[in-house]
Amino acid sequence: MPVRDLCADAHGNWQVGAIATIVDIVASIAICTETAIIRGNVTMDYNISYYSSAKIQEEVEIVAKVVGNKGKLSSIRVEVKKKDNGELIAIAKQWTASNEFRAPWINHPSKL
Image 1 (cartoon, one colour):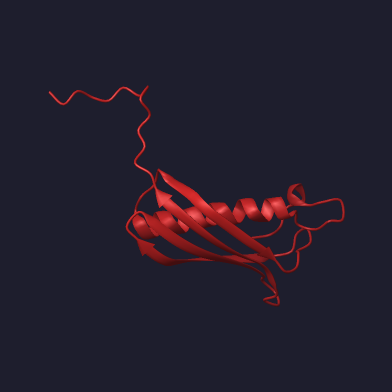
Image 2: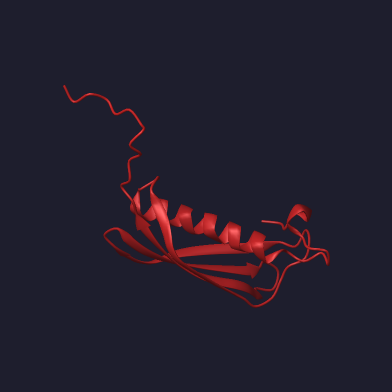
């Protein structure tokens, strides 16, 4: 995906907040495809390390892998690299938990 100008800082680099946001989204998609649970995944622990940055319109590659899945707990690793030379931009590790929370104000259909 190309880095859009809306995600750039004053120096034309990809903002770290934008990187963290897209990494969180990609990790959530990876969990959904692995566990088939679409709603109710809650991030329990999120750790991201930044190594370099990308400029506006530079192509980046984001790869997510589910490292472990133990019932309701899942661990994901996400790598962000520059597409042209493979330079590492960021690595993230995330733990999520499946939550079966049902809001009390939602009307549930009758079981009768």
